[in-house]
Image (cartoon, rainbow, N blue to C red; front, side):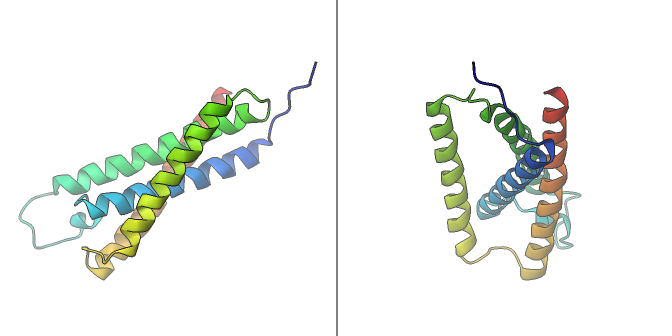
Length: 144
């Protein structure tokens, strides 16, 4: 019987964080295209306390970063032993490619967000995605 092998925990953690951050940035770019703008928090021209689109964008980016890190860490932990079916692997690859292709298309078009606000929103999405992806990967590895 074949011996079960596992990736080193630091490699799984790094891969899960990178995957979670990329998914969080892709969701940020797609959300900005459809009006879910993180930069709405820094605008002074609105009379509202916090625009609903900015709050939804924060939660959406945090959720995608956390779940991307969590599921990637679980998949990488079980992939070395061959526990992932071939169809599931192909489905996950197709979903990842479609999300990143959509984000690339959204990023190539002119931005509806002013430049400084867009840069700050991008950095905030990067940091939020990284922290949440780390938390998701840490919880997944702790459970495993």
